[in-house]
Image (cartoon, rainbow, N blue to C red):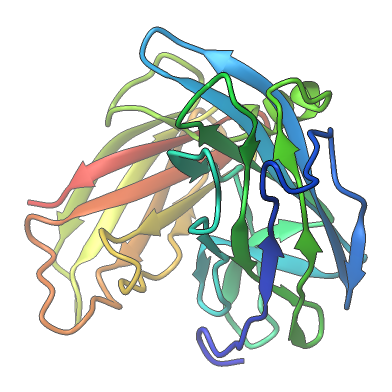
Length: 281
């Protein structure tokens, strides 16, 4: 399986207000290949600065099948989203729950999800008093022994009174919290990042704090999607709270410079997840 080799089919969600559309809690499940998908709705959340409706794309994968995170790792294709057809929607933001790494069957590792998944959406309406109609083209891949595209066409109007608020809040709790380097307000923290001379490439060394005995993983992303950084490898898991990971500064796009770039490091434990922006000197 070569990196990002997949041809994907769209998942379109179309709903036009005033043309027979009505607000509802969720669409029916639609089956395709080894996955099924639906759109679910939560409530309208008001903050001092904005209002947004909670929604989500819910996926159920057959046993042994997986789909990918925003950065798929050594192989695979990340989902893509196009909300261009929506009405009364100012913006729609996809939130990514903490992923896991798994073997890609070709000697490398991919990053993504197994089993059930909810990708939370935060939908900001143009006019909060009106029902929003979400239209999104959602392209994704599912992989077992082989990888195949899956698609569905779903309709959902968002009244801001959906009954799936609880499951959407739970899914958002697994979205990594953005914190600063060295911040240790919780049990999980990225303590330090340093760059060391290596062979063909310099090496990045990352120290992570985590609860003693808890499994921890680390993922690294470049400033743009065309960076293909290796997955960090654990080199010193120890028995205490400090863990160490390393990865080579390899996979940069042609002409890119590591110095001055901002990487995103995501640390994941069984009950916590954080992401930390890191400026490379």
